[in-house]
Image (cartoon, rainbow over all chains, first blue to last red; front, side, top):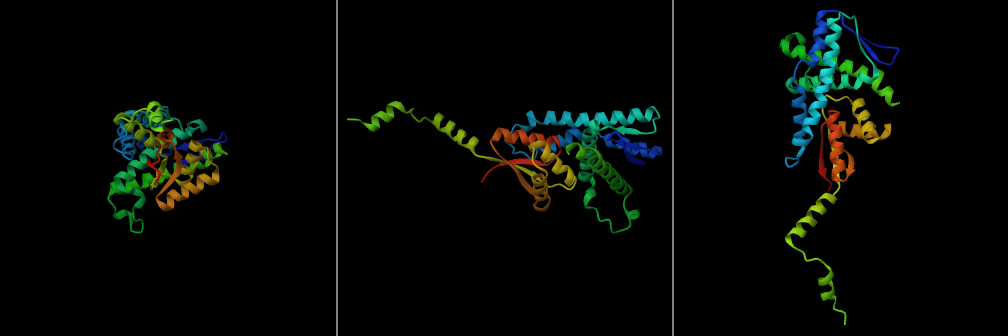
Length: 155
Length: 106
């Protein structure tokens, strides 16, 4: 898979195999993720607050909109056999948010950011190895979104 | 002769349990609240600074200072003020997926 900046100030993702497409579709594979994230953020507020009642539904909807949008963009490109997925500047934040959700989820499930990489990765459980590489790929995509789109928009 | 005690009792409302409660509530809501961002291993440093600029309108330098405080000390007070506005900011920061809470100052 290649990821390139475009002349229009966006990014272009070029999947090169079915595995690449699968990898992208996994960004939005879990329907419960927006709910879990909204509730876990609410847990940071004190127990007396009415955060859960008033704020969590809005947050959940916001997070779900991000994943639905990205899911639709990937599925549409794949179904239409398009060679690339384009992320224009106006859509960068939604992509970033959806990817962030999956990285937070991978961290919660596998502690991917705290794994000891000094050993042989082949010795890891396949599920853990997969989570590790997915996280590295999503991190790279987020870094490029920041560098080529989001930070530039702020300048 | 001017009776200060009588005068005061005439113009000042009597302090009932209800008014005491209201005064306590008022005092509590007057207490400044801190908006506190907590460190997490997922959110990128550049992203956290970007969010501080977007939400609070901070300069690049201030946003980076606060971001580094979150990173090195595990938490940073990014804003202090009234409760309602603090809640608003926490909601905004949650929307950007930053681990944020609020606490009474002091």
